[in-house]
Image (cartoon, rainbow, N blue to C red; front, side, top):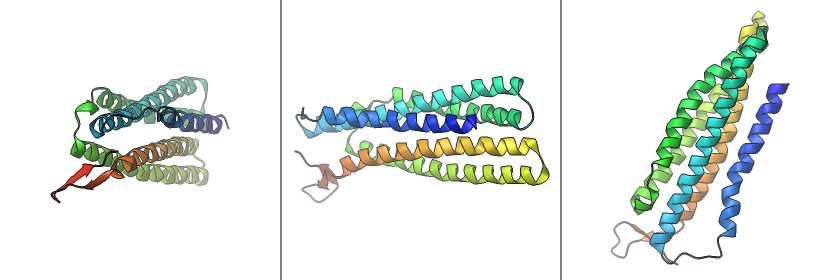
Length: 208
């Protein structure tokens, strides 16, 4: 099915695009930063960049699905039309989320974050992504339910909606899963450098 090939291709692109920051990071590792404060600023900038790229990908996915959904609505009928209709409607929400998320990342000032803010931002993003991944599993389950119900009731609309939810939920699960991994990796790099402060109150970065 064309829709299945589309989501597989987009998922591969997501994985490749998200892998790029780590390739670049490995190439730049030979130039050490002068101190812990500079390292923290670079770490925060990388986290913001990864999430900004992710919001750009989500925005592109939403635009693609809205465009093909509107075109498919007028060029098809029955189950296929319902599939395209649901894709378009679903991605209006994705478009809004991506636009707001991208704006938040673009306007962020990671260079001004202290250690506490850096930890808070990283943990907040990781928890949000894990919550979203849980929702994605729910979307897949509901899509399967609609598809099965449409088959039992011979409803082309329900079958089309169900298939759309399976495609959209599958893409979002891969998207959120990869982004969770990248954010968790960044958070791990930060927490690995934490040690108790000399006075025993709070934490501080070890360096080098």
